[in-house]
Image (cartoon, rainbow, N blue to C red; front, side, top):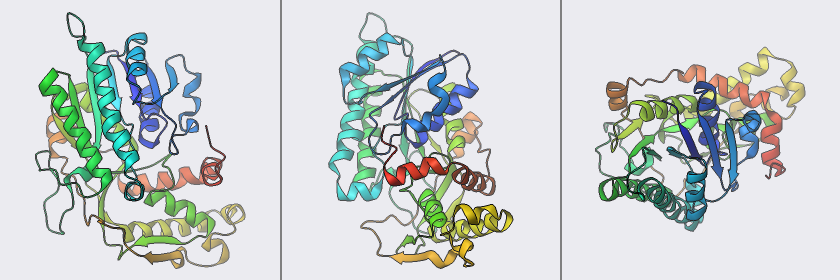
Length: 359
């Protein structure tokens, strides 16, 4: 079927990747990208999409209900894919208000606009509201605990995860109270191109290339399930095309790694890339291998953050069984692609680090 999509948070990491993926794989569809361009939103993430007649960018806040409703009507939108969120746990600890404002109040604003436009007439307009959430709403697992399933009780432990849990509940409520046609997906940690360099993998990559310390919380044994971002986009595609209204689907990579093992792997890959390409030493003279040192020498253990969840793991059995989804990238291929992308796109991350990327 042909769709007209509104993608919120479209200039962020996952939203931008979704726009690129959908534009490439659904040539008959129209994409309206919607973003408030807060610190992690970057128009550069959308690149050449701006030149496409099937793409439009709108700079606005999801909390502006009237603006969203007007846009839904103007563009005859039939599908909302809702990525817009504050998502950095450390920032939520230091300043939780922004997380409540965007993740809870903003999501409610979007739901109100969708209900008004799609269900406010004499007959409902065919539609889908897809809400993108996180595995962090389920809390923390012990080393031997089974992975998170869709029916597990919520137990958020940070202001970020609590705000996402609240938004999940609002989406569910709009289905059961008003009949809004919703689906939800809870994903594991994403990595890949255009990842803002405050998160573990991109932070390590840019620090390694600059010869800077690699901060690792606590003992580094916190475990996360990692998913290449384009595989996440494929999972959402399956939910939109085959998913059952009202259902929740876990999208995971079946790929658990301790943080310290991720950091060690990135160090070893950087050393390997530098050994294979002598030009990298000239481009990045401060990097450890350019100075004849091992990248692992940059690792520094730092005080753990408050309430740091020990382990997340996604059981993606439901989306595999019911929708036929499976990741395409292995971690070996995905992490190499990611490092190669950061090496090839130095101006992008340099602009973020020096603040010149401002939209």
